[in-house]
Length: 146
Length: 146
DNA sequence: ATAATAATGAAATTGATTATCATTATCATA
DNA sequence: TATGATAATGATAATCAATTTCATTATTAT
Ligand SMILES: [Mn+2]
Ligand SMILES: [Mn+2]
Ligand SMILES: [Zn+2]
Ligand SMILES: [Zn+2]
Image (cartoon, rainbow over all chains, first blue to last red; front, side, top):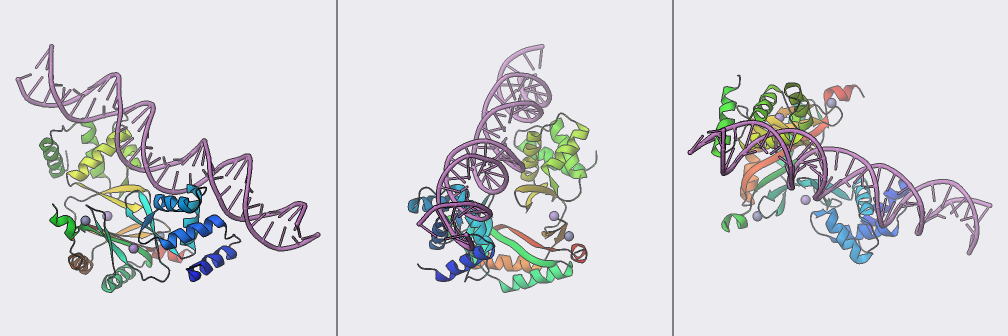
């Protein structure tokens, strides 16, 4: 089994909360870790079906919440009215740039922006917990082809 | 009638698109302009009912879309799973700071952040169209009372 | 007024997510 | 290794914001 670290983390999280590492959960973790980028529930559902066609959508929703709670996954709302997930364990924080035409997603990190966000929160006497920042635009490819 | 400017803009937008300034639309505009801050459809629906209890929710949804298209309103998704609107005509662009405890919303504008967003888009060869940026935290009030 | 067209509101539909619940799986312990 | 307490599953129903449908009503140009 690959992803030994992530598996350990998930196991620990489950154990701490008196939950079990079941087969469906193991399959969903595996599929999640093997998928690149930003994935939707439906995509994960389709992929788990290839491994075990009995796993239901509800179990995917539930397992993804557990992965978020255990710190392995992050929930993004890059698309209106639909959430998507991405790996966060062992990766650095970043924000997103979305092409409104082809939906391509690029990632970026801007330390200065992060700094100013902190300062802004402090100025408003807020204890900053998190932030959403997404830039919407048209990518070079889409710009040329239209 | 107050808000002559906004009314003109709405009338022009409608005329340009072969639509009519009907009574329901006029009422909804009025209610929208008289409401401070960030408002949800349900809130607008309740308020329009006081003026004309026959106006349906669907008409509010439709009218708010028109207000967005005409440049009078902006749609925000500060709360998960629900959109809210705010006035933009005659106001400056800003982003939001949301208290996760009491849901208080504060507004801020940080020119440097905006500048860096532009630079980031350019670096990725994206033509920047818009951005979402919301900071989540705990306000001073909520910090003290807990 | 009249005809052509646009708008309305009630109700149905959609689509993502969550809850319910009978059934099945897990695991500590006898 | 059986057993019973508890957790997890998956099919299905429920939710809920938002959109669509459609028969009826308003609006406007003629
Ligand atoms: Mn990402
Ligand atoms: Mn605002
Ligand atoms: Zn593109
Ligand atoms: Zn607060």
